[in-house]
Image 1 (tube, rainbow, N blue to C red):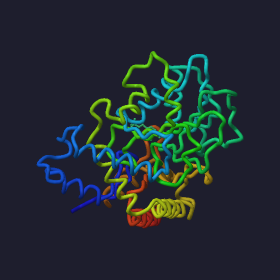
Image 2: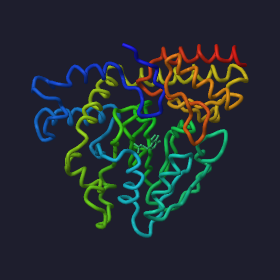
Image 3: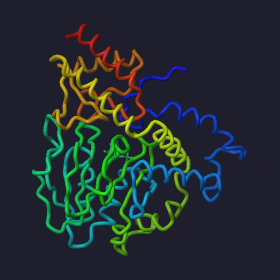
Length: 358
Ligand code: PMP
């Protein structure tokens, strides 16, 4: 079997054990004579999957009963609109921290729906970074404060979260379940599935139940958190297969342990940053104190060399190293499931490429 080292930012590499388990169970799920994709979402087989996926997420994140765990369709981008629709009342202001391309998209959607104060903005700075807590100009009585915990494109990540009076809402699409954090700092956090959780097209939303009561009457049923809380994400047909993969991925996370995965993530990133810092040939794009453990972004001396790097690395079985089309450069996305051997192989390739082209 030829598996490449897949450095894609998302959809991203999934644990091989998970793919193999899904393959084994694909045509006949637990002897029921059909795949889990073909089972009724109201039947016993799927209900067990839904329950286990939810329970695993609760356990891994250490959530109390005051938080609801939801699986919602439309990816993380739908949450850019759903959060203000549900949480930003008329006449209120929401504070948004603009740390990059993804935060900017969240700001844009919120502005369609209500009053937004951009509390800090470093989206266009190079080297890339996230704003410090002391830079935030927060609105007294704000409806909430929105941050992006990890900017997937720029490779800048919060290493500690700001403490805010208003409920803190975070887009954690590209670093959810990659490190321990205190969920009680947050009123809500959400993540598209396609990096650390499973297949694309849906989002995990964790929300403090009381915040869902704020929803104005004008919000349609499917777009109300309250609807999905009351029906346990089964108001309509959920993305059953995606939730089944979340169940397998979270089982895998529990088996290996969050502490071990976190240490491994830090170690993988440190080895890549050490290779970048070893000389003048490679240049990291994020300020050192904000360097992401998930998306390692860097540049080479010229765009021609960057193109050659992408091409040659692909011939070596490395996929997805080209930086996002909006910024160029290189990006190695090394989520939970990315194997440490793949990082070692990339470091060796980088050293070799520099020796030939430096
Ligand atoms: N937020 C962040 C931080 C992301 O990285 C992405 C996707 N790469 C999104 C939001 C959008 O996710 P989706 O494509 O699931 O809407």
